[in-house]
Every structure is written in structure tokens, then in C-alpha cells.
Length: 244
Length: 263
Image 1 (cartoon, rainbow over the protein chains, first blue to last red):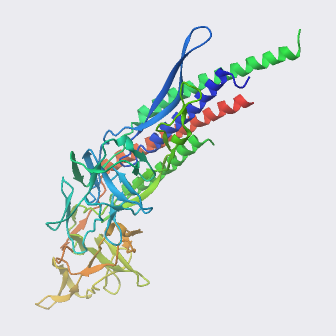
Image 2 (cartoon, each protein chain N blue to C red; image 1 turned 90 degrees about the vertical axis):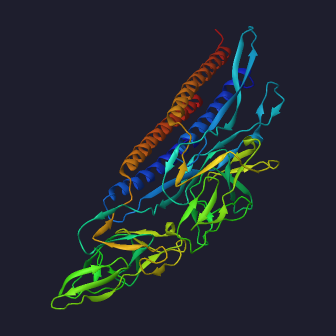
């Protein structure tokens, strides 16, 4: 009985609902995380014809992808807070040796005066090197093209990188993306750097809540179906044990 | 509690911390020299479920597809924004503001160093220039009891006009401190800061030199809190809190339904 196609379908569906729920819960959780780009769900639907000749469409599984729509401006006025308008990612040297990418530009200086992420990972210049702000600097400006001007002199250029296929980036913790092995980072062209401003999260909490409520309904239906199924099964076995 | 409920419950905790930070900013929007702090979150780890694969129409075939699911957010950093506040004229000769990166240096009761943008000073029983907590301003500067008028110029040089004397008496110079990385300073009660390895050691200098900034007397630096933005942020954080509490509820309901199925 447990291998019944219906049961497989309904329990599989329940697993998918749980996964989809987590995707939405994660988006809502990151609705105020700088430059968070929301995860989108792509259901893998399948239609089968049952014994009665009816077509039944159900969700066999889900895929996720990232919606790279830009987030709104968050103005902070901090000299080391920058955002990218347009395409591209900042480069970050991970402490594990990997090179990561991020849109979140809430950077600061470490004790060596390197530009770093809040986690302490170094932000890369256009050549992949560290960015160091000299001790003597009194004023910092970051140009639209990423050039860092300290007291009138260019000291570095913030690296902005892009990939042929942004799907080659996988999401990691701490607002980072890790490219797949074959993905090649290139210098981005179509971008502007804004200074004293951060990119906000692109999650619409309202839309996410609506999606969650829909999922909740779907879950109720699914569970009701499973209950009916189990009830039916129980009655069947009962009638088998106590024949009239 | 299900994993989904845990994600949302942790987010409620994050938003709670955020609300506290914003409330503290709002509460200090009238505090001289106060700098607002911003609470940041970051993504928690992502689970790559690609390896698990997904069944395709053909039951024996498992196709690997992109499926990465995040596990919410977590606190990342609280950053103090050292943006200058607006000058506020007060008419008081012992109210000061630095027009640059410089901070006033204070000496705590046990001799520790403190730094502040709040230049609302007064004199103690010994005539020493102190802040409202009684911490001595470096100099130090001692104002004689018989001083009629105190004048501080933009280079921080303090003069007192003494009764019966023609020339004003030079009392010393207020020395300022600045830091390689002010963001690394640690906030202390009373709008004061202490240095940390991240901020680096204080660089000392005279007002008006090397980016320290000149001193303006009869003026205080207002807090740099933007009330309207803070109120908007507060509402946003409270909404986010509420939404996450609804997610906890929905996740719990879902878990209960599955449990009832088993019973």
C-alpha cells in the first residue's frame, strides 16, 4: 500500500511545500539584509494521465534561482559604504582561500587599514589586490567608476566583476556568492559606484507573505488528502479484518 | 519547533536587536555629539540540495538542478556612523565643537583615556575644565577663580581675562585626538568612546592642523541622528518582526498538521 503512486505524490508534494516554505521564510528573514537578492522558486511541474484518463498536474520538485533586480538605496553617509548601480559584484578574498563576490558594500577598515567586509574579508581592487587606505589620508572620495581618491590622489580602484552567466554563482553565508569552477570573472562595464549609500534588500515582504499564505492553503489541502487516504485505507483494512 | 519556525524565530531576534539599536539612536537624537549606530544582518548558510537531485517524469532518472535553500539571517555588525552633526550655537563660552575629524580627549577617574565629540564642558571645584561626567579635558586647562571671561580661539588656545589685568592670561591649549579608523572605536556611556585595536591608537594634535579641525566655541555638535529616517527604519524593523512572527505561526501550524497525520 505504501508504494501507492498517490501516497508518493502526496508525501513528495509535502516535502516540496516544506522546501518552498523555507525559501520564502529565508527571503523574509533577509528583507533588511544589505543587497540581499531574493531567491525565486521554479516548480518542476509534471502532468500524468490516471487510469480514468484524467490529466493530473503536480509538482515533482523545485528549482531555485536568484532574482538580481537591484535593491533600493539606503543612505548612511559613511565614507566606506558603497553600492553598485547596474551590473557587477564586489570581489572579496575569503579567509578560506576562495575568492567570493558580493553586492553588499557595507565595508569598513581593519587595523591594517585594509578595506574589509564586516566579517573581516578583504575587498579586492580591479587587479585582485587588497585596498589599503594610507594613515595620513584626511578625506576619501570614491568616484562613479570605482576610483578611490584620497586627498586628491588616486590610491586604488574598487574591483567590480561580472560573469557571463550569473547562475554560475552559488549563494553562501555572509552575503557572499561563490562562482562555480568554470566561471570566469570579468571586469564589469555597465555600472556606477555610489558613495555613502548601500543597496537594500530586494525582497518585497508583502509578496513573500502572500506566497506563504498560499503555500499554507496548499499544505492544508495536501494534508486533508493524505488524511482521507489514510482514513480510507483504515476502513479497508477494517472491513478485511471484520467481514460482515 | 520546525526548522522553518526556527529561521523565523531567529529573524525576530535580529529585528529585536535592530529595534533596540534604532530606539537608542532616537533616544539620543538630542544628545550632544552622539553618533548613530546601524545594525546589519547577513545571510546565514545556504544548503546546496543539488546533490539530492530531483525525480523527473521517468521514475529511474534523477536530474541534478539548482536548488539552494538559505537558513535565514544572522547579526553581522553594529557600525557607528562618524558623520558630522550640525553645529548648534549656544552662547555658552565653555561649549565647543570640532569642525573636523578631531575628538576631545578626556581623562577618566582612574586615568583612562576617553574620547568624545560632545564639547559641553564646565569647571569643577578646582577650576579644571571637565565634561558633564566630571572627566578632565586634556590640556589640561585650569581656569582661575578670579577669571572674568574665558576666550577659546579656533586653535584651541584658552585665555582668561583676570580682573585688574590688561593682558588676557594664556591657560593652555586643548589637544585633540583622531583615529585611523574611527569606526573601530568602542561606544561608552555618556557619548564617550575608548580606543580598540581596530580603531588604532589615538593620533594627537593641535586644532586646525592635519585634518583635526578647528574649534568653535559657543557652539555644540548636534547628534547626527536623522529622526525621520530613524522613525522609518523603526517602523520597517517592527513590521519585519511582525512578519517573522507570522511565519513562526504558519510554520507551527504546518508542523501540527503533519503531526496529526501521524496520530
